[in-house]
Length: 324
Image (tube, rainbow, N blue to C red; front, side, top):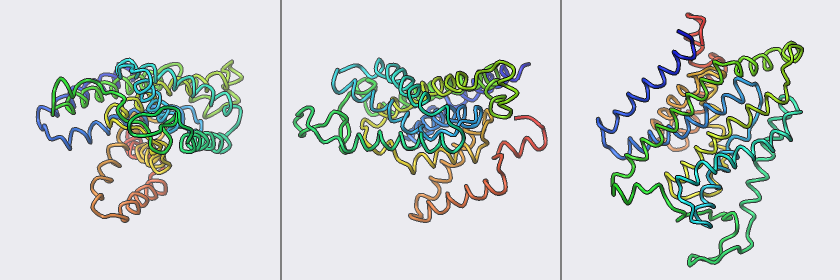
């Protein structure tokens, strides 16, 4: 059995197991936390394609996530587009934004890409929070085009609140699970397929890869753009889940938290980002009662992995089996 088929079967088996969770526990807190895990799982698996597999030091991921969230909110708020229709459109908008960022950044190398993508993300953030010109006048007061510091609310939902009443979060759980499963399978198809081999060749030995006819710019633009679709979908689903979108989605702290998930799990691996997301979300939740010590604890966890386990948790398995 090929590695790709094996990993896809594992992904489907895990999805089947997770589909049973609402039947075992209907606790709202557990299911909403799991739904948030699905959102972050989508983001880190797609970011891993760019950062870990292709070796592009992009820090624009939260800006792309925010693009999907804002596109969904604005389509729903200004044009009354149903969220189910707005979500795929938001994904396509995110791909377009990602391609523009890629065209600006991918001719640079290493830390310069990281600095420029982070700068672009901060410019977008500042454009949003400094947008104070009144675009429309709802009953709640003047609202700028991009929502300003207040952001957007009341832009619609997936419709499950009306259908299921107080159990709407169960339906959101299954939507999140379905989206995360698709994102993971897409990630597996890329990593275990010919495109993944090309991306890894460009990452590990760009001179040889280019000599074999692989265009570094074209292939990196491909992975930069393709991974953005599910990142935008994750942002769109985040908007639908929480019903509000504001500048907090650009948070640098959240960007570093998600980056830590990839590092802790194992950068460039198939299952590392998912494992890292699960471990750090559990650690974050376990330290929630410790206030400021919570951030210190997460920082210590990251430091331990960077120093002692640079290949992440998956690296432990690789030491014994020689596989990823």
